[in-house]
Image 1 (tube, rainbow, N blue to C red):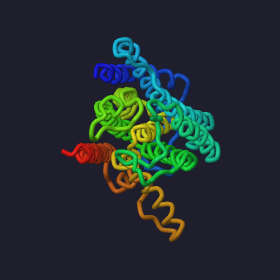
Image 2: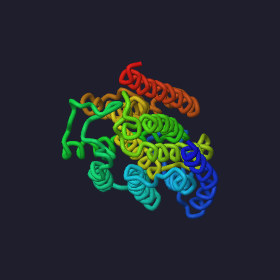
Image 3: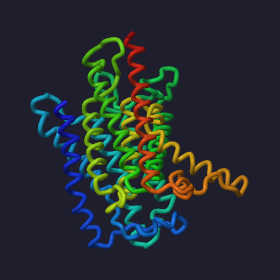
Image 4: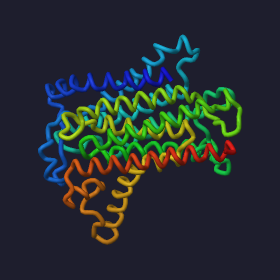
Amino acid sequence: MKSVLIAAGIGLIISILLTPLAIRTFRRHGLGQEIRDDGPETHLSKKGTPTMGGTVIVAATVLGYLAAHMFVTHHDGWGFSASGLLLLFLMVGMGTVGFLDDYLKIRRRRSLGLNKTAKLVGQLVVGLTFAILAIQFPSHGITPASTFVSYVRDLAPLALGSIAFVILAYLFIAGFSNAVNLTDGLDGLAAGCAAMVFSSYVIISFWEFSHDCARKPISGCYMVRDPLDVTLIAAAAMGACLGFLWWNTSPARIFMGDTGSLALGGLLSGLAIVTRTELLLIVLGGLFVAVTLSVVIQVAFFRATRRRVFRMAPLHHHFELAGWTENTVIVRFWLVTAMAVAFGVGLFYADWLKFAGL
C-alpha cells in the first residue's frame, strides 16, 4: 500500500508543480489553443490559452510510477513488470500522436491538426503494437492480456483467438482514446472524469492483487498478471490528473490538448484490458461513452434526415446551448461520472461476492 501512496503522491506533486512551468513555457513560445469557429461563442475568449498540457500529465504519471519503484522495490522484492511497461508505452505512444496533432494545430493556426488518415495510422501503430505484445510475456502461464472478452473476469464462452483479439483490442483502444478526446471540450471536464475512473482502477487492481490466484489460490481469486504494478500506474495517473486539474479548472490556465486526452483514453483502455474488465469500463467511463454516442447519433441522424437531434455535439455543448453555464455542465457531468464509477465498482465487488460464495 505504501508504494501506491507514493505513486499517487509523486504524480500529484509533480503535476501540480510542473504545470505552472509548462504554462509559462508554452505561453512564451506562443503554443496557444485554436478554437472552433462553429462552437459556443463563450469559448472564443479561450483562444490562445496554452495547450499541450497533457505532456505534464504523461510525465507525472511516468515519474510517479518510477518513484514508487525507486522507494519500495528493494524492500518488497518486486520490480518493473511487462504489464506496467506496456501500459506506459500505450500512454506515451497515444500521447505522442496527440502531441503531433496539437503541434500542427498551433503551427497552422487552425483547430485541425493531423488529417484523419495520419491520426488513424498513428493510433493503429501504437494500438496494434500494444495488443500484440500484451499477449506475450507469460508469467505463471498468464500474459498481460488474454484473448477472451472480459467483463469483470474473462468470459469463457467468448474466446477470440490471437488475431481477433488484436483487432478488437485496437478498436477498443482507439475508441476510448477518441472518446476522452471528444469529452475534452470544457475546462477540467476530461481531467476530472478521468481522475475518478483511474481511482476506480486503483481499487480494482489492488483488490485483484489482494486476491491474486498466483498468491492466494482461493475461491473468487483473479487470473491476472502484475496487478500491483498496474495499481501503481493507475494511482500515478490519478494523482497526475488531480494535480493538472488544479490549473485546468474553469477558467483554465492551460488545456491538456490531444496530447493529454489521447494518452488518458489509451491508458484507460489499457487498464481495462490488463485487469480483464473491458466491458466494465463501458460502465465506469459511461460519460465518455455517452459523449461519443451523442456525436455518432448526431452525424448519423443528420446524414439520414438533414436534421439534428442535439443543438450541438458533443453532448456538453448541447447543454451549453440549452442555457447551462459551463461550470454547471462540468459539475453535473462530474457527478454523473462519480455515480457511474460507484456503480461500476459495485458491480465488480458483487461479482467477487458471487464467485467467493458469500
